[in-house]
Length: 473
Image (tube, rainbow, N blue to C red; front, top):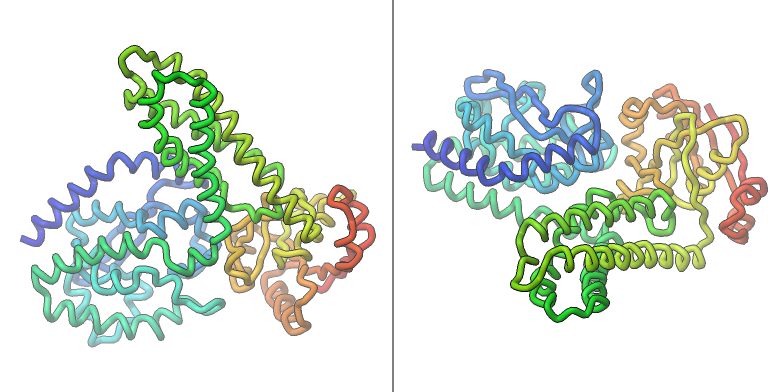
């Protein structure tokens, strides 16, 4: 009975979600190089290994890199991968494992071989049943990656702190297994997947980005309404009312893909403005195509050509002006409060420690050095609110504890310490990490009073007055 239920529900899930699979595959391919699917060894029933399928959420590397567990903010995870993991969409291909008989819908978590080896002898009964897509631990540990403290060894923390709490739950499930309990866990799994996709912490950390998203959605409605008003054709009103909600809903996924909400607004650059223009253009084409295919504009006495070519062109023009315009105004307002400059990246492969004023000035300094090309690969900063955000198109890749992985992943050659408030102990700690990773480290210093009084269009002068480098290791 359980096997039949596994097959039926897995087939239904695959068929229902089949429409979204090509879209997810395209996002993964566009986001980074590598295959769409990730295949990994997991311990199945009887201790036998099987190949488990997932959507790839990490950068493809020529050799295995880092621990088998991934914590929050892991720099190996791609931008699209973070979204897939948060929504648990990366787990969907495991329905194929269920169809093959390697897994079941409800059961203990499929464990990696190195972690399974750490199970105590009395808990190995867990491997006498098939691992499950959902189960008591998958439900209670829905966002387990958030539990790991910064800088901790994830494998050691999992074995010493998390595993002792999980094993009793799996053992209790196995010893008291029942059909009705499986149905209960199945419904609970769907519930927590939906309700815990976005937590309170994420809302707080990304409150400014969420505010931009809301304003963008309102701007979409305003732009389409203005386009209809300019046309002033009463015959178009029925189609307009039907299309108005789609003007915002269809565009949102496109805006997210183009990274509208990654930049820190005060560091908004031409790169970010270009992405907004590209995103609006792409979303307008999608909106136009969906409107045409849906037949919403095929009303009696109304031709699509008369509605589409004029209204959609006006809508695109107004929306582009609104989205770019208010972002530029926000940046100017913020720059009025704190004088900052944007910069671009160049050639030598470097990382800047400090995604703030010092990091911003350091970015300018490296850009304006004659005869030394620099490629700033990203920033390191311990502020969780800056994780994944961009400064002048350059991303905050992680915190200080991610440096060993970042150095290998991006082939970093040098690191520039640009936090004026850092203590001697903190600087010495980072120098020690740099030394272990074979990275040359430099201390960047600047005078805040000299820099803050300069205009934003004089970066070279600012650096001439305030930039100062000293090699540490």
